[in-house]
Picture (spheres, one colour):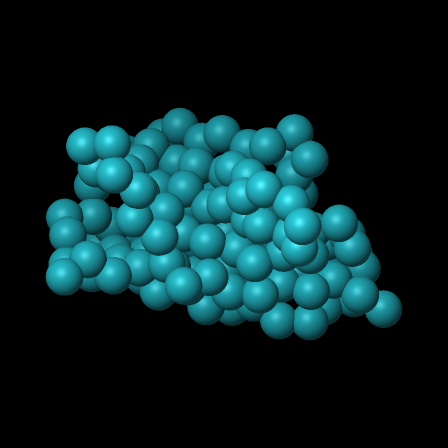
Length: 115
């Protein structure tokens, strides 16, 4: 059974940092992995993704220079390091991968940036 379990969210002040983790199980952890987020009343958007080797990453313009995605296949884990957080980063963050056109999602972890 495929599972993606996110953790690391929470309440942080503007300018602060959080590190999100996503641990996968039930599948071979050799896919492009992605982080998405969804804010209240907004569509889910791609934040960052990382290819199978970890050698290529992409970021949404809104997070470039502040967020870093990384992976450790030996631990079946992908991380999202988030620095210089802004109130507009507030959202539920989801881990994702796609296999044969089907999207797998975790349950999400809430990130709230507020003073």
